[in-house]
Length: 144
Image 1 (cartoon, rainbow, N blue to C red):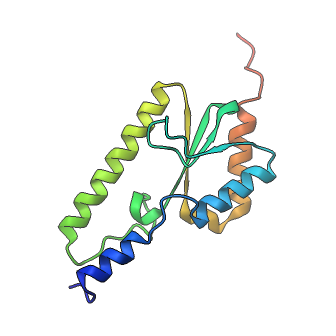
Image 2 (image 1 turned 180 degrees about the vertical axis):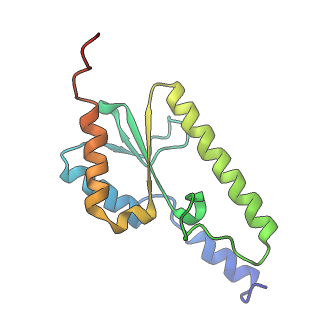
Image 3 (image 1 turned 90 degrees about the horizontal axis):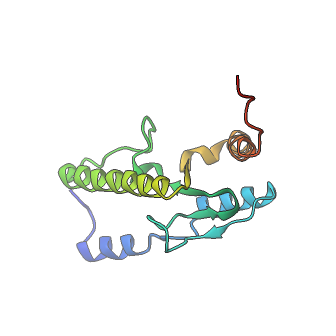
């Protein structure tokens, strides 16, 4: 049972930011320090990716573990109150994320997802990003 009024809950949910969130700003700062240049929230791309690196034909979504249901993450819990509502809402979000990823890949974009919980270990996240972008510049293995 919710302990606050529907009006207060509505106001609280309206305060949730859709862009320039703290996790997004952290990832953008990390990319900038790695020397990567990007654009933010390209509305002409499916899903309006959080970060777009046109030179690398790569988009990055910075997903919250709770809202986007990070598999195996303890932050992806389901509220006990009105569980049916939440499960349906989360299922729609996951399906929408998958559809956006498929659409972007069909347009030739590479899609990376950074989960909110990954920000707890910045060294590992930085290495993951370095590996992802350096892989684009490695020469192809010689043909056998």
